[in-house]
Length: 580
Image (tube, rainbow, N blue to C red; front, side, top):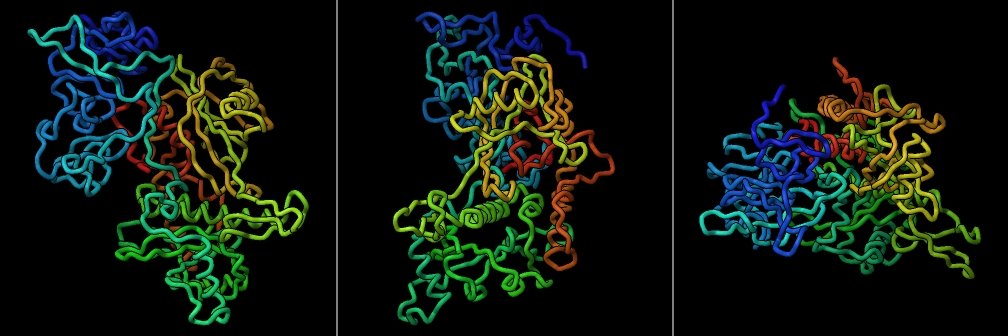
C-alpha cells in the first residue's frame, strides 16, 4: 500500500521509516526526529521542543507523544489515570479523565499488546478475541496497568517547555526519554510456564515451617511412633503429589462438550502412600485452604512400581503423565492450570535432584535429606558437607539484524519438521551471561554479537534427566556481522528470517490446535484409553494448511523472545498469543 507523503512528514535517519509530521519519535524504531532541538534552558539534553505540541498534549512514560484528545497512550495503551501522581499528562489526570465515550460496564482488554476499550455488552475483545476477564474495569481497579517493559528510563521528571506557547500558558510536559543506540523491547507476558508457583507466593499470609510440616507428616505415616496425643495440630491437612519415574499423577475431570479437557494434579491423603519412608518426601510449601484460615502442607514423593499401581493409573480417572505432555496440554490463559504446572515442575526438579545426588561429592559418603527434603547433608561426621539443589543456567538469545529488520533462528537435528527456535547454550565457569551469549552465537553460527539486552528468565525442569532443573536466561543480541557459518556438530541449519515471515508464523492457529490435541491426549491417558506417551508426538503440529515454519509454543521462553521482537509496536497480537 502506497502512503501519500504530505508536507512536514519525515523519514527516520536510522531506519528510513516514513513518519507523520507531528511525530517526535519514529513509529518503527523509536529513535528521535533528527531535525528537532533539545533544550531545557541549561543546554542540550532537556525536553523535546516540537513546534507541533499543542495545549493538553502529553508524553507517555514509554516516550511517545500523544494528542490531548487521547486518554490512553497510542503506543502502549497506558491509561492516563494509571500514572503516578504528578507524572504523565499535564501532571496526571484525576479519576474522571477516562477514555472518551466510556460507559458503565465497559472494559479494557488485558491481553498483552492490546488494551482496547470494549463495550459492556461484549464478552470478548473485538480486536484480538480475548475473553473478558472479570474485575478488570480500570475505573474501579488501579491494578489495570501495562505489563512490564524494558525502557531507557522510568518516569521522567517534569520540565517546562520553552519556545512553545498556547496563548500565554507554557505547557508542562514530562521529559521524553534520551536517545538510545538500541530499540527498547517490550515484555508481553506476566510469567513463564513453570514460574509463579502459588506455593512459593511470598505474599501469602499462611505459613508452615518445613520442620513442623515434616513432624506432622511423620506422625501420619507412622501413627505408632507417638500415639494420638503426639499428633501435631493440622496434620490432617497434608497433601501428597505422587510421581513415578519423573511423571506426576494427574487427573482429567469431565469437561463441557464444547471445551477441551483441563487436567489437574491428583493430590492424595498421606494414608494412600503410608508404606513410603518419610525421608523420601520433599516439602513443596503451604497454602491457605480456600475459604478457611488453616494452611495445608504440600508434599511430593516418587513412589515405586508397586506403590504406583495402588495410587494411580488402571483407568481410575488418574494416571502418571509425562511433565512435557502436561506442559503442552496446559491452557496458557488459565492461571490455575499454569500454577499447577509450576508446582509439578518444582516437585520434579527436587525429586530428580534427590535421585542424582545420593552421595557426597567431597568424601563419597551417603547424603541424607534435611529441611524436609529441600537440602541434603553428608552423613560422614568428619565431613557434614551441606548440599543444595542443582540449577544449571542456560543463555537463550534472539540475535537481531537491526539494519535489515531480521532475526536469526536455528534448527537442531532433533527438531520436528518446520520448527525453528532461538540459539541457546550453557554458561562456562568464570563467564558472565553476556559473554556466554556472544561466545555461543559465534561458535554455533559465526555471527559476532555487540550489545546484549536482558529479556526474562524461565525455570525449565523438563530438560535432560542428568540436569534436574535448568534456568533459561533470555536475551536480545544485536549482530555486528551477518555472514552465517553453521557448526554442523551443534546445529542442522541457521538462517535470517524477516519480521513479516516471523509474524505470519506466530499468527498461525497451529499453537492452539496443538494445545487442544494434547489436552485430549492427557484426558485419554487418565481414562486408560491411551497407553503410549511418546515425547516427540507432543510437539507435532497438525494442520490442514501448515505454516512454512513454526516455533516452540507459548510454554517456552523462545516463543516470547521471538514474539516480543516481532510484534514490537504492532497494534495487533496473534489470537493464539499467551497472556501468561
